[in-house]
Structure formats: structure tokens, C-alpha cells
Amino acid sequence: MRNKSTSEVINALLLTAYFPPDTGSAAHLFYELGKALVGHGHQVTVITGMPGYYAQGSLERYKGRKWIKEKIKGMEVVRVATPQLPRHLMVARALWQFSGAVAFFLASLRLAHYDVAMVYSPPLPLGLTAWALHKVRGVPFVLNVQDLFPQSIIDLGLLKNSWLIRLFEAMERFVYRQADAITVHSEGNRQHVTEKCRKGEGGEVERKRGIGIKVEVISNWVDTDFIRPGERMNGFRQKHGLGDSFIISFAGVLGYSQDLDVVLEAAGLVNHQPYSFARQPVTWLIVGDGVERTRLEEKARAMKLCNVRFLPMQPREKYPEVLSASDVCLATLHEEVKTPVVPSKILSIMAAARPVVAAMDLEGDAPKFIAEADCGICVPPGDAGALADAIMKLYQNRSLCQELGRNGRRYAEKHLLLETAVRKYEELFSKIIEHRNSP
Image (cartoon, rainbow, N blue to C red; front, side, top):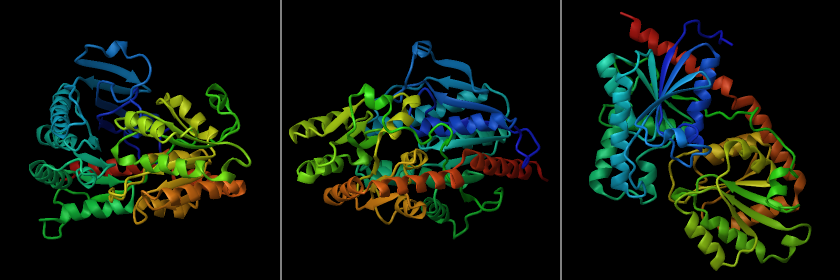
């Protein structure tokens, strides 16, 4: 179905380090956007890496390949191999990001001309790929900033090398200034990006070849047809022997920024409250994989947390079942995370009509978003007692659980639809193309 807001066919190039069968929000955000653009009659090409980020399904056809082209949902997907380096080491991760940027650029030169390119950041060096493509072929580009790199890893203490910090901060300012437009998912992110653009520019954000307002807020979306309110007593509960437990779940990547230590500590507090099992058992379910999983499992065993279970990363098609089986869903971030991120899992929880309990910086954009939607409870980051109290409040008040869940679903259906975001991107792309073609 063609969107009435634009009449021309747009030939768009999407640059992203992750794409299905990789899992996670980074992989599926551009997948959903590209599929929707194709549905509107546009042409979409994706340049990405070989699957490897907790990829699901058979990966045999990718083994040993340096280049592969395939068709996915009407999109032409070009995959290129990048060096496999230990990404938990910051220098190695930087080398992987830069080598990937070069590989993507070389791949783009082998393909047809495009009207516009769009980049998922991070990794930030992909912005250099789009800039080089603009220099060589005149292709304008939009930078979609999902995570404020490098500030996010500086806050966590993962990036300490002063030389690398200066390098990445200089690159951040350069890429922001070169982009024809920048899109972010929240107002706090817009303010951060705008300040970075202004730094050293005498307060001037717009560039001569710009299109007007450079930084635009376009909310992330959630597929409300894929994730819907479902039966609590479903096949996922049955398969994993969860019975009628009151389930508090965290589903996603178990990385440094998520601070799942506070979840284990809250589980320990709840476990020692005599009324916690008065009505039904309480189970804390951690579903996912990542660099922190082994340490967290060892900590749970050391704490003798019999009410905590770990399950591996689930295939995407099972994710709605995980949410439906849950009574409460968690979103947590380290107290060091000061960037105004809105984790995508919050949107999915809302679509599933489950209440959110978020433990993160209360001055960030996510708590403001949750308050606006009236879909959950927010507590300070790292405060296990406050997290345990929020859980027990919902455990004892099931009508509040249902009310918050309904509010979240209602908000998602009104404000977080993919179709709304696609129309905004079509209009933005058309504006950029029109400006490029003007005298």
C-alpha cells in the first residue's frame, strides 16, 4: 500500500551492523522499517554484517562467506564479512567498528545509486561510511542515533583511554555535522545531539546543505500486531514448568549497562518476606544471553536464590509468549547510565499489556515516558529495596497490574505505531531528496 504523503518511489539504502537473524532491537528496528517502506512501494537495500549477534536459526549458508546477497521481505540484503575480534576489549571493538565501516563502504560502491541513505548508530563509524558515500556519489544521509556513543560507555567506565575518548568524541561531532538530518527517539537525546552539533560551531546547528531542522524526534515503534496481549497461562509457562507462579521477567541482552545485580538483590529481599508466597510462588525469570550471564548465574547460586531462573535467549517468535507469561516485566539500567535512553523493551512490554517496573535514572527520558503513558512504576537505579517494594505492590494489587498494562497497550496503539514512523521517514527522505535536486 502506497503512503499518500509521498508520490515518488524512493530508493533507500539502510546501513546497520545487525540484521535478522541477529536478535535484539538493533537488528529488528531497521528490518521493520525497511519492510514497511517496501510495502509503501519503495526500493530498499540493506548493507549489514554476517549474522553473529545472538543469531537464531540455521546459519550454515553464511559460514565462510565474504559476501552474500539475499532477498528478505522485498528488501535486497547485502552481507559482508568483518573481522571477528573480541568485542569486550575496547580497542578490539574499535578496530571491528572501523573495519566494518570500510567493508560497508566498499560494498556500497558495488551497488546501484541511491536517493538517500540511513545509518543506525552505534556503531558510530558507520556514519563515516555514509559520509564517504556522499562524497563519492553525492548520496545524502540520515543518521538514526539510538545510543549516545561514546558518552554511554564513558559513563559505565568501559571507555577510559583518553586518546580513544577524544577520537570518538571528535568523530561524533564530525558525523553529526555531516549528516543531512539526524533522528533520535526522545527529547533528551535531541538536546544532547544538538549540543554536540553546536560545540565549536558558534551555536549554529543547521548547515548550508541542511534541510531546516537538523535533529528531529521520531519515536521508536513497536509492532502491535506481532506483540499483542496474550494468555498468561500459555505454552511458554507449560514448557518451562512455571505453573501459576507470579513471574517477574527480564528479557534481553545481559550486558554491562543493564545492572541485573539489583534484580538478584531484590529477589533475595522478596524471598525473605513471609507474605511473598501467601497467595502463589514468586519467580524471577531472566531470559537472555550476554557477557554478564555467567557471573550473574554464579552470584545467584552463591546467594541461594531458589526463586530465580535463567533461560537462554529465545527466538524472536517466542518473545511475545515470554511477555504474555509474565505478570510484571523489568527494565533496568546502571546508575552510571546518565544518557536519556528509552530501552526498546519498554515499548514491547507496553504492547503486551504488561506493567513495567523500571530501575534507572529518574531524570532520564524513560521514567518520563513511563509516567506519560501511566504504564508502570519507576524506582531509583541500584535500589534493591525500592525495586522489591514495587514488585510486592503489584503482587498484592492485581487490579493495578491490569490497569497499568491496559494503559501501556492503549498508549502503544495510539503513539508507537510503525505506520506513523514510516510516514515521518518518508516525508523526511522526500524533503532531503527535494533539497538535493534543487538548484
